[in-house]
Amino acid sequence: MNRAQLPVEVKEVVCQRILAGDWKPEAAAKATGFSTQSIGRWLERYEEGGRESLRVRRGRPRRKPVKQLTKVERRVVDSALEQHPHLRNRSLRDYLLRHHQLKVSRRQLERYLKSRNLVEPAPRREEEGPPRRFEAPEPLAMIQMDVMYVAKTGGGHFYVADVIDDHSRFLLGSVALEEQTGEKVLDVLRDVVKRWGVPEAVLTDRGTQFIHWRGRTRFQDYVEKELKAKHILAATQHPQTIGKIERLHATVRKEKLRKVGSYATKEALQADLDDYTNYYNYERPHQGIAGVTPADRFYGMGPPTAEALRRAAEAQAQGAVREERVFLTANLMGRRLVLAGPDVNSLQVLWNDGASTTTTRNERAPDIW
Image (tube, rainbow, N blue to C red; front, side, top):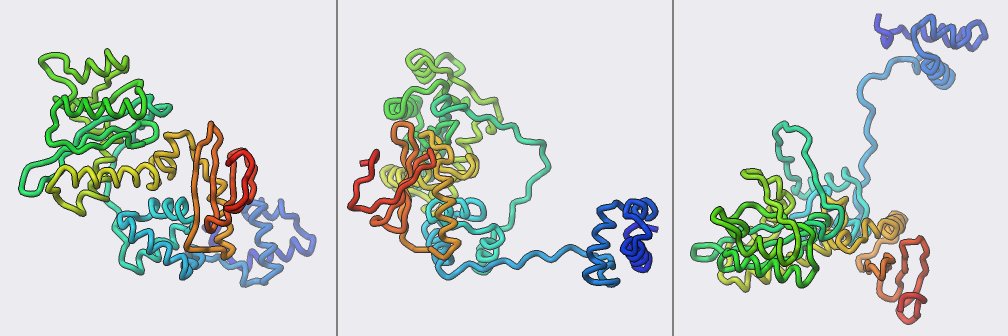
């Protein structure tokens, strides 16, 4: 007989004999084949509910009911979706926590999105082995560079040369081009170096803008001779090597470019690229770097705002939810600073050493202003 099918009558006799002092739990466990912990649970249930409480409860335990979002919380979610309709699931939760200090559970958000018919089926993935991951140890230790096509109104293509930091995913440059010649792409890299600094290594694919079978290119000479950096080439027919910038291209197409479709001028394309670059670097939580923004990582913030977000989320859980909020992070000579509050007249100053103070717009806080 299966131990789970032990008759209720037998369990009752065991409990009665133990309670009467005729049997010790250890002896009962040995006789029935159950552990002493199980015997102890029988006794607790028998003393509280009698014989019926000893019956085996089958089936999965019922899940706790999902708490519905409040009216104010729904407005915050709707506002986020209106500004960034591509956000879903984890990315939406990260965005709400970072920019609105609104912490919602996965089930709460799924239920609300389902009520608005915004739930997207999860993509089916083929069985693969565990992915191989690599990440540069610090900003500018390695950058990735690649070119993508963008449709031109009336036929043909524009080109976009992108450069990202491997460690932080910070988008260092995104430039629209009329043609993808080696000289044009090299100008993009020169501008990135002038603005952000010299990288230790540059990772590219094997496009003719970067290398050529007939000999060295100006791009290679600039990277290796002028910058004294290492030029790393992606494996042939293996886009995963430059997976971070390929992922960036897929993301910007989905979240920005497909909404427009095609561009009549290079200037119009560049304006959209500039707008998206600011959003991508400073606002959009990145799931590949634990939900912080690329700027957080590039400037050495780690997850610097964790304490501020926790306090804000706790305050909201207690009903202190407002539609207008101030949330600002900064790195001041190595010290991480967060300014957070319901409005500009009531800000809390939080440092990474755990110290905090509350100030108002008209007061002068020491060590800050």
